[in-house]
Amino acid sequence: MDIRFLGHACFELSEGGTTVLVDPFLTGNPKAAVEAGDVNPTHIFLTHGHPDHWGDVEDIAKRTNAHCVAIVEMAQELQGKGIENVADPNLGGTVEFEGGWVRLVPAWHTSTTPSGTVNTPAGLVINLGGKTVYHLGDTALFSDLQLVKRRDEIDVALMCIGGHYTMDRHDGVEAANLVGAKQVIPCHYDTFPPIETDAQAFKSDVESKTSSQVVVLEPGDTHSV
Image (cartoon, rainbow, N blue to C red; front, top):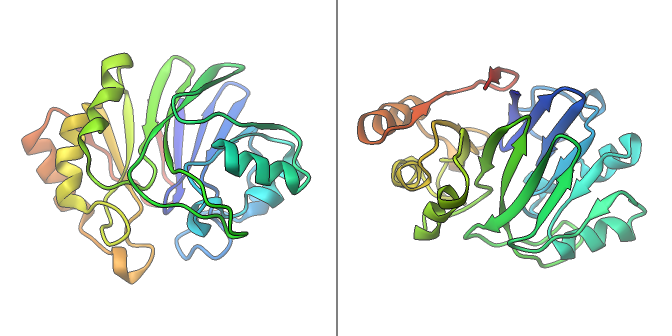
Protein backbone atom coordinates (compact mmCIF):
# COMPACT_ATOMS: atom_id res chain seq x y z
CA MET A 1 0.00 0.00 0.00
CA ASP A 2 1.19 3.49 -0.85
CA ILE A 3 0.57 6.44 1.47
CA ARG A 4 0.90 9.84 -0.21
CA PHE A 5 0.93 12.94 1.98
CA LEU A 6 -0.95 15.76 0.27
CA GLY A 7 -0.42 18.38 2.98
CA HIS A 8 -1.92 19.31 6.38
CA ALA A 9 -3.98 16.22 7.38
CA CYS A 10 -4.83 15.03 3.87
CA PHE A 11 -3.55 11.62 2.78
CA GLU A 12 -4.12 9.38 -0.21
CA LEU A 13 -3.94 5.61 0.43
CA SER A 14 -3.64 3.43 -2.68
CA GLU A 15 -3.60 -0.31 -3.22
CA GLY A 16 -4.70 -2.16 -6.34
CA GLY A 17 -7.69 -0.37 -7.81
CA THR A 18 -8.66 1.34 -4.56
CA THR A 19 -7.68 4.91 -3.72
CA VAL A 20 -8.78 6.37 -0.39
CA LEU A 21 -8.61 10.13 0.16
CA VAL A 22 -8.74 11.30 3.78
CA ASP A 23 -9.70 14.87 4.78
CA PRO A 24 -9.39 16.47 1.31
CA PHE A 25 -8.39 20.03 2.26
CA LEU A 26 -6.61 21.11 -0.94
CA THR A 27 -8.16 24.39 -2.15
CA GLY A 28 -6.88 27.14 0.16
CA ASN A 29 -4.24 24.87 1.68
CA PRO A 30 -0.86 26.61 1.33
CA LYS A 31 0.91 23.25 1.71
CA ALA A 32 -1.27 21.29 -0.73
CA ALA A 33 0.76 19.07 -3.06
CA VAL A 34 -2.00 18.84 -5.67
CA GLU A 35 -5.17 20.61 -6.73
CA ALA A 36 -8.62 19.19 -6.06
CA GLY A 37 -9.09 18.43 -9.74
CA ASP A 38 -5.96 16.27 -9.79
CA VAL A 39 -7.24 13.55 -7.44
CA ASN A 40 -9.52 10.69 -8.47
CA PRO A 41 -10.36 8.68 -5.35
CA THR A 42 -12.63 5.69 -5.21
CA HIS A 43 -13.34 6.51 -1.55
CA ILE A 44 -13.30 9.64 0.62
CA PHE A 45 -13.16 9.38 4.41
CA LEU A 46 -13.64 12.34 6.78
CA THR A 47 -12.44 12.60 10.37
CA HIS A 48 -14.56 15.67 11.17
CA GLY A 49 -16.16 18.76 9.70
CA HIS A 50 -13.79 21.67 10.23
CA PRO A 51 -13.02 23.46 6.95
CA ASP A 52 -9.38 22.31 6.95
CA HIS A 53 -10.61 18.70 6.83
CA TRP A 54 -13.97 18.95 5.02
CA GLY A 55 -12.16 20.89 2.33
CA ASP A 56 -13.10 19.90 -1.24
CA VAL A 57 -15.16 16.84 -0.35
CA GLU A 58 -18.31 18.06 -2.11
CA ASP A 59 -16.67 18.89 -5.43
CA ILE A 60 -14.47 15.79 -5.50
CA ALA A 61 -17.31 13.46 -4.51
CA LYS A 62 -19.65 14.84 -7.17
CA ARG A 63 -16.98 14.63 -9.87
CA THR A 64 -15.74 11.13 -9.05
CA ASN A 65 -18.77 9.49 -7.36
CA ALA A 66 -16.35 8.33 -4.68
CA HIS A 67 -17.81 6.34 -1.80
CA CYS A 68 -17.89 8.81 1.10
CA VAL A 69 -17.70 7.69 4.73
CA ALA A 70 -18.38 10.20 7.51
CA ILE A 71 -20.02 10.21 10.90
CA VAL A 72 -23.79 10.20 10.61
CA GLU A 73 -24.50 13.95 10.91
CA MET A 74 -21.90 14.83 8.28
CA ALA A 75 -23.07 11.98 6.07
CA GLN A 76 -26.59 13.36 6.18
CA GLU A 77 -25.32 16.80 5.20
CA LEU A 78 -23.44 15.32 2.23
CA GLN A 79 -26.59 13.51 1.13
CA GLY A 80 -28.53 16.74 1.45
CA LYS A 81 -26.06 18.35 -0.95
CA GLY A 82 -26.85 15.74 -3.61
CA ILE A 83 -24.03 13.28 -2.92
CA GLU A 84 -25.57 9.81 -3.14
CA ASN A 85 -22.73 7.36 -2.51
CA VAL A 86 -22.48 7.89 1.25
CA ALA A 87 -22.14 5.64 4.31
CA ASP A 88 -23.18 7.02 7.71
CA PRO A 89 -21.57 5.14 10.63
CA ASN A 90 -21.26 6.46 14.15
CA LEU A 91 -18.39 5.93 16.58
CA GLY A 92 -17.56 2.24 16.76
CA GLY A 93 -19.14 1.55 13.38
CA THR A 94 -17.29 -0.27 10.61
CA VAL A 95 -17.89 0.18 6.88
CA GLU A 96 -16.60 -2.53 4.57
CA PHE A 97 -15.53 -1.82 1.01
CA GLU A 98 -13.75 -3.71 -1.74
CA GLY A 99 -10.24 -4.38 -0.48
CA GLY A 100 -10.75 -3.37 3.13
CA TRP A 101 -12.74 -1.62 5.82
CA VAL A 102 -12.80 1.56 7.91
CA ARG A 103 -13.86 1.95 11.55
CA LEU A 104 -14.64 5.18 13.38
CA VAL A 105 -13.05 5.58 16.81
CA PRO A 106 -13.10 8.50 19.28
CA ALA A 107 -10.99 11.63 18.91
CA TRP A 108 -10.97 14.38 21.55
CA HIS A 109 -11.72 17.60 19.65
CA THR A 110 -14.65 19.74 18.44
CA SER A 111 -16.35 19.79 15.05
CA THR A 112 -18.75 21.90 13.01
CA THR A 113 -19.00 21.78 9.21
CA PRO A 114 -18.70 24.93 7.08
CA SER A 115 -22.51 24.86 6.77
CA GLY A 116 -22.97 24.74 10.54
CA THR A 117 -23.69 21.06 11.18
CA VAL A 118 -22.40 20.18 14.64
CA ASN A 119 -20.94 16.67 14.81
CA THR A 120 -18.62 14.44 16.79
CA PRO A 121 -15.02 14.14 15.55
CA ALA A 122 -13.48 10.74 14.93
CA GLY A 123 -10.29 8.90 14.24
CA LEU A 124 -10.24 6.45 11.34
CA VAL A 125 -8.86 2.92 11.51
CA ILE A 126 -8.41 1.93 7.87
CA ASN A 127 -7.53 -1.53 6.62
CA LEU A 128 -6.46 -1.65 2.98
CA GLY A 129 -4.60 -4.46 1.27
CA GLY A 130 -4.00 -6.21 4.59
CA LYS A 131 -2.31 -3.18 6.19
CA THR A 132 -3.88 -1.11 8.96
CA VAL A 133 -3.50 2.67 9.11
CA TYR A 134 -4.82 4.73 12.03
CA HIS A 135 -5.52 8.38 11.16
CA LEU A 136 -5.97 9.95 14.58
CA GLY A 137 -7.84 12.94 13.17
CA ASP A 138 -7.58 16.14 15.16
CA THR A 139 -7.21 15.15 18.79
CA ALA A 140 -5.78 16.06 22.14
CA LEU A 141 -3.85 13.46 24.07
CA PHE A 142 -6.19 11.10 25.91
CA SER A 143 -5.71 7.63 27.32
CA ASP A 144 -8.22 5.80 25.12
CA LEU A 145 -5.83 6.14 22.17
CA GLN A 146 -4.28 2.92 23.47
CA LEU A 147 -7.49 0.92 22.93
CA VAL A 148 -7.17 0.70 19.14
CA LYS A 149 -4.10 -1.55 19.29
CA ARG A 150 -5.93 -4.02 21.52
CA ARG A 151 -8.06 -4.98 18.52
CA ASP A 152 -5.80 -4.27 15.54
CA GLU A 153 -2.05 -4.23 15.00
CA ILE A 154 -1.34 -0.73 13.68
CA ASP A 155 1.14 -0.60 10.83
CA VAL A 156 1.12 3.19 10.43
CA ALA A 157 -0.33 5.99 12.57
CA LEU A 158 -1.02 9.35 10.91
CA MET A 159 -0.63 11.73 13.84
CA CYS A 160 -1.28 15.45 14.39
CA ILE A 161 1.58 17.22 16.17
CA GLY A 162 1.14 20.95 15.49
CA GLY A 163 -0.32 22.04 18.80
CA HIS A 164 -2.73 24.97 19.36
CA TYR A 165 -5.75 23.23 17.76
CA THR A 166 -4.57 19.67 18.51
CA MET A 167 -1.96 17.99 20.68
CA ASP A 168 1.58 19.24 20.17
CA ARG A 169 4.72 17.24 19.38
CA HIS A 170 5.43 16.65 23.07
CA ASP A 171 2.03 15.10 23.73
CA GLY A 172 2.49 13.32 20.39
CA VAL A 173 5.36 11.33 21.89
CA GLU A 174 3.07 9.93 24.57
CA ALA A 175 0.36 9.37 21.95
CA ALA A 176 2.83 7.38 19.88
CA ASN A 177 3.59 5.27 22.94
CA LEU A 178 -0.11 4.64 23.55
CA VAL A 179 -0.93 3.81 19.92
CA GLY A 180 2.04 1.49 19.50
CA ALA A 181 2.18 1.67 15.70
CA LYS A 182 5.14 0.25 13.83
CA GLN A 183 5.52 3.59 12.06
CA VAL A 184 4.26 7.11 12.71
CA ILE A 185 3.81 9.82 10.06
CA PRO A 186 3.30 13.29 11.57
CA CYS A 187 0.78 15.71 10.08
CA HIS A 188 -1.28 18.81 10.89
CA TYR A 189 1.78 21.01 11.40
CA ASP A 190 3.51 23.95 9.62
CA THR A 191 0.43 24.72 7.47
CA PHE A 192 -0.23 27.98 9.33
CA PRO A 193 1.85 29.95 11.89
CA PRO A 194 -0.06 28.75 15.01
CA ILE A 195 0.82 25.11 14.26
CA GLU A 196 4.46 25.43 13.28
CA THR A 197 6.67 22.86 15.02
CA ASP A 198 9.83 20.80 14.69
CA ALA A 199 8.99 17.46 13.06
CA GLN A 200 12.58 16.24 13.28
CA ALA A 201 12.59 16.83 17.03
CA PHE A 202 9.36 14.83 17.24
CA LYS A 203 11.01 12.03 15.29
CA SER A 204 14.03 12.00 17.59
CA ASP A 205 11.90 11.97 20.75
CA VAL A 206 9.54 9.23 19.55
CA GLU A 207 12.34 6.97 18.36
CA SER A 208 14.28 7.40 21.60
CA LYS A 209 11.30 6.87 23.91
CA THR A 210 9.05 4.37 22.08
CA SER A 211 9.34 1.38 19.76
CA SER A 212 7.85 3.28 16.80
CA GLN A 213 9.75 4.53 13.76
CA VAL A 214 8.86 8.03 12.54
CA VAL A 215 8.65 8.78 8.83
CA VAL A 216 8.58 12.52 8.10
CA LEU A 217 7.00 13.24 4.71
CA GLU A 218 6.98 16.50 2.78
CA PRO A 219 3.75 17.28 0.91
CA GLY A 220 3.75 15.17 -2.23
CA ASP A 221 5.98 12.43 -0.80
CA THR A 222 4.88 8.78 -0.91
CA HIS A 223 5.67 6.09 1.65
CA SER A 224 5.15 2.39 0.85
CA VAL A 225 4.07 -0.05 3.55
